Length: 186
Image 1 (tube, rainbow, N blue to C red):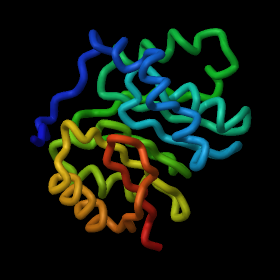
Image 2 (cartoon, one colour):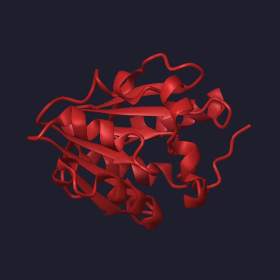
Image 3 (tube, one colour):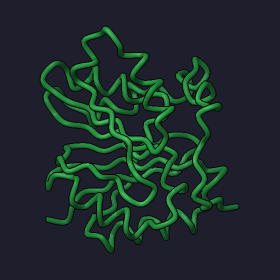
Image 4 (cartoon, rainbow, N blue to C red):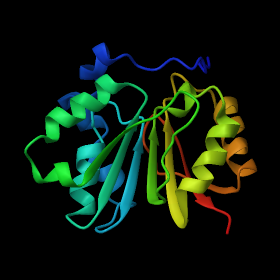
C-alpha cells in the first residue's frame, strides 16, 4: 500500500526516529560511510531530530559542512539543542524548507533522502530542484520503507528522478528497505 499523502512525521513522534533500537538496525555510520567524505558538503533532507545529521557532521570533519533541512521548525530545534556548545555547531547549517521548495542555493556533494520521498506530493518539481543542488559528481541516496512504498511506486519515483536528469543506480542493501543511488547525467 502506498501512502504518498504529503503527510510528515510530527515533531511529537521525533523520539521514535532517534533511538538505540533504530541505531542497531539502521547504523548511520555504516549507511553513510561509503558516501560522505571529509571536507565535503552533505545535505540531510528531512533531517528530523538529527539521527543522520550528527553522524554526517562527524564524517565530513572540521573542513566539511552538513545542511540539515526540515519542514518543521520543531525538528530543527531538536537538532540545534543536540549540537549546542559542541564543535558540530560550526559544521551543521540548519535550514527550514517550504512544503513546495527546498530553498538551498549551495551545491552539495551528497544528499540523503531517508524515508521522506513518499511524503513529497510534487516529486517532479522536487527532483528538478534537487538536480540544481547536487554537484555534477555528487550522489543522492534514496531509502524508502518497504511497508509504505510499493515496488511500483518506487519505480515511478525513480522515473521522475530520471526525467530530471539523474542516472539511477542500485542502492545498498538495507533490509527491508528500497534503495537507489542517483547521480547527475553530465
